[in-house]
Image 1 (cartoon, one colour):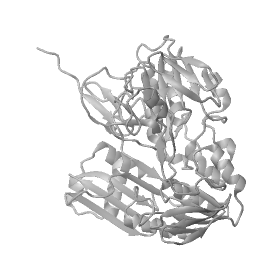
Image 2 (tube, helix red, strand yellow):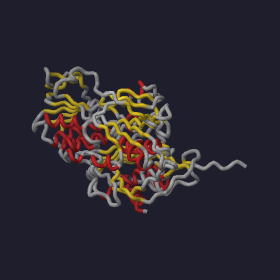
Image 3 (cartoon, helix red, strand yellow):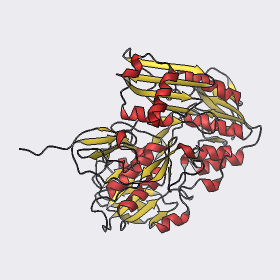
Image 4 (cartoon, one colour):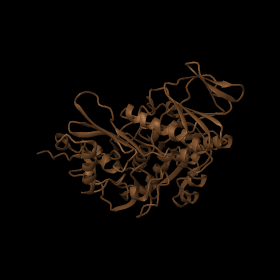
Length: 503
């Protein structure tokens, strides 16, 4: 009789796929508990079950090294009680002693996470991390906090400079890759150097999307993607200066809040009926609009930019309705696009981003991709948490681990604005088969969206203390049909989730 094929289990927090008869006690990628695994598909060898060691921020997914949490998260500022324990990652089977050459192009959180994972899985691997920037790899997620004055430049780096030497990671600063040759297994730099690789991990991120309206090249017009961008904005900024942020999404909101904190007169332009339309429904968007108005930001909705006007320097923003908003500084925050040009020229499969499989391997077996540039099952995540997880998995796989990424729910949080917010999963119903329970009271707004008795999405505004049990309920597909039959209020749902977390 044929041997029974063992099951596979997917971590609903980070997308790691474990193969075996039972899920592991702890996820080796993010440290999630056994209860956060769901049946997935096909077979493979089970991973080790390490004991909890590090800590992860439940708000932004930052991983803190050490058995005790920090006083506050250095990325999002969440208090220490919002950290959960993680497990140490086991080494990749058979990886120890293998002196594989791994080259990582791009030193954002995906690239640094990949380097960490390679070194953890393969003590003898040669690791080269290529950064286009002069600065040490830093928390891009923290740029708005830096712009707001909540943290200083010394708080931006992910690791001190000594970490790279201590972990034998060769970090190349101001090194721009000119070409990638997958078959020859080499990376060519602009300065003429050629670097060989056994495995290549592309973590080259994304660039700001600048709509094709005239005037975007005028002096005083900027995006906010790099530490240099933040420095240039701060160098120009003066209290009372008229500033315009184009784009009312997550980055536009945080940038407007940061500039307002610095004493600027800020106008935020959003082309939709309410801010953050990709993350919030109308009611939550209106509540957010009221909040930003209360902290001195002038929000204009249905405001579409026609032109950025001025002579050499910016003087204002002309809208399609004919109004002109005065501006001495304009920050464009209208989304990003993956940096896929190197992959295209190298002959890799590219759709919107570099197409990868569940192992984050591209169309060439020796090239992997992770972070903002990677397109997995048609999804480009474009946020910090998935980039960290994918970088970790890509690094482990470059060292031979064979770890799968099964996808994770999208979630968004706000910094800088002084308003707690979490948006996760599907927050709008598709049809009448969905149940929606929402409530606004006491400075907070709860919205829970259910389908087939399971929580599939939520918005928490003003109070995000339910973040941990909420994520768990969505990511594990907890059956809440019994609760729904009792026709609960939003407060009842919240109480149930809190009690479930306590158990």
